[in-house]
Length: 302
Ligand code: NAI
Image (cartoon, rainbow, N blue to C red):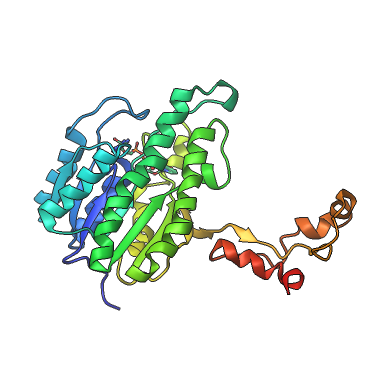
């Protein structure tokens, strides 16, 4: 089997000045990609800014013989997103790969959460993904090629105490992917979502040290880099990983129960009496688009 290479490819990795994003940038560059290392260089909660994080990663890539350019824009503004993509186009002429990885945390239980904490987290993760992905997708459409990765979290896919803002943003990314994969399919742009696990500054006080040591950021790299490669033909999928474990996560649609005849009203008691069937996930399958549910209504719609 041939090695997976990125010669001639241009990649943007947001939040690549530290943590998992840095590892993606280093590996893509090692495999021949020209990389835009974006990082605002703030603290874990998103305050402050510094060029040093992105600069250090660019330096590391260059001293290993790779090609990279730094960008310090904030992903959470359209101006920032446009400038990140412009950095790639000005330096290398195009964008083939975008890993939306930048992230912050402002944890608080829901009843105590302030509007500012809500907005900051939604702004970086969810709006940030829009602000960077839209200008990048325009370039990918022109070139009829692209690979986009959104970074979700098990906090969004499954839940985590104190992270309603973060969870909502992270699940929102799955929502962007579900529709964008349809809109970009004809342009050969594959879009997937990952939920990584790594012991970084984001999780150092959440994951116990013993477990954390086994959750190296590097273990997230191979699957994400594969999803960014020409070999990858999957689009619209979600993968969860950590410590060398990789698996798929999916929102499924279950066959449920057809009640009534589309003419008569349906009573609350009919829901109660059929609830076991309505609630069952037996034979549930991931849907490819919202209209897939019509097949389950089939007997009623015929
Ligand atoms: P990290 O805090 O080490 O790295 C995040 C990077 O994003 C930082 O270098 C930061 O400066 C940058 N950044 C933050 N806001 C930015 C903005 N507005 N514009 C540009 N850059 C910005 O965190 P880590 O752990 O590497 O996280 C990477 C991604 O993975 C995040 O999206 C995070 O939510 C996600 N994630 C991480 C998990 C983990 O176990 N570490 C678990 C689930 C998801």
